[in-house]
Length: 462
Image (tube, rainbow, N blue to C red):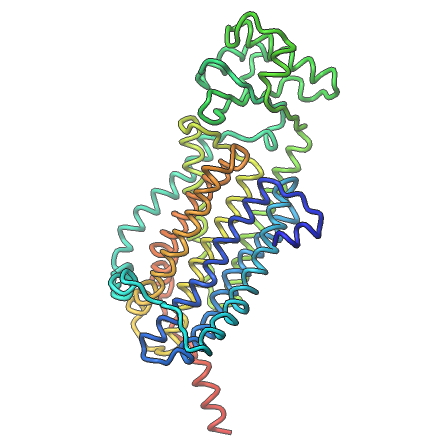
């Protein structure tokens, strides 16, 4: 991926690095899916060669479904995103393509080489043997309680729209300044004291890091532009901070400009409107594309609707936290281009989790069309639980490292991803799969055809 980015003369921004880190998690997921299927074949008594052949064969569908769904959101983000988000999407698209290439081809070659030397990977650990392969949890029977939890989450997600968010300068429009304060000040204190210096309109104030730095965004004179207007707004900010004793009285303007202002940027309202429109368009198109892809792939609307309900659940969780905790967290929780990238990535990750379970449900129904729905769906969740936990923990750890070491530029993005990984794991187990039981009143899900048996039957008849 790095070689391709270098040959394309791409700029490696923090957003691009975020996309690179995320594809590491997806690459691990590809191998986990394959190895889990190999383990299942070995448990059934097959030889290593048979288990590896069947393991890869049964892994093609879930691996491709998960990566194609992520790729769809990345393409839409690349088309409608601007600035660093476009770089994030570009990196993710190449990363996803190479993840499939390496996971299904390169790892297969390595496995075959070892197998020919009569050496085999140890696919089992004590934990996987004692916990995951003995998992018989009754997830579907608990759906009445999880529906209550999910209902509360949906209500909080709707309430967050009315409660409001902190919008980044890209969406709000205005001039944004990150100021280094020698003494700590609260967000509300800064807002109240600077209001009268900006035509009685509250500035947007957000905490940056834990060292007392604050980001102040004001729409003061935003309808005007030019170097002189920018200087006037900066001077007004300086005078306001000095008059309210928020910076030392002996601070000169030159010192304020060169030492205390760490970052300054301006976004005009027209650009802000374009960004909002692009973000909304990207999100709506992603959801529609995912719905159609699942419908084409599984041929039953219940799977598509179950996926969309699960995705909306994850978005509501993220919205609720970004709204109700925006003034509590020690770092900025704001709706900006990075947040939109995080939401679309969460949608892709959550759908990947859901598709893995759905693929297994369809496979079991094809083997036994008359099987009980609750039993089949419970079995599918339990049998994929090892992969779900392993992949979620892997992605969570990679994003956690990005959250801790990535700096302020991607901290909000990484935080949204951390929430999304947890919410996506929960929703794929407790929302998407259980919803299938209640959506399928006529038992159409079990009308699956075992393709291998069907082809064999046609050959026999011929």
